[in-house]
Length: 155
Image (cartoon, rainbow, N blue to C red; front, side, top):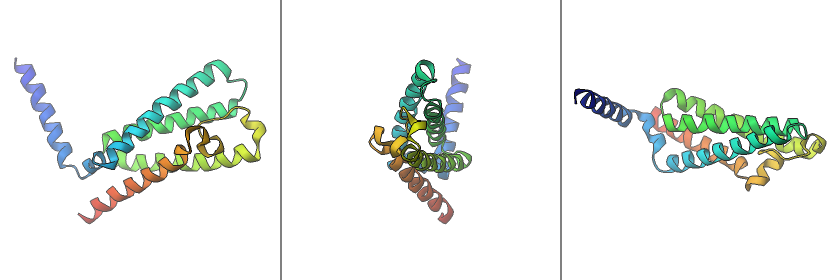
């Protein structure tokens, strides 16, 4: 019985600490939706990359390796958005920047070097296979993360 009380007290303490953290604002409003979308993309990109690497890697190794990279970035961004502290905030910004640069670079290369992209990756053609969400999502993520950072600096 005492062990349950200790666990409950520890959970309560962690919840109170999170609610006092200025970075807990990452979990409000658009932050929740952003985290959910990143979570969906982490799952879908991981599943796609896993299938591509296991079944067809020799067909388009560059494109499929980039799909793995995209999946890792989506996972990192999702985890950092869920954690919501100072360090994870900075890592989430870096992940969003890496994602945006990846979409731009791979998008350009998929048009200029189509032979290297015999099969599309998540970021090919600027994310057209995913409705251009990979192009827009990091911009929304960066906007939200910078907004949170600005709120924290002014308070």
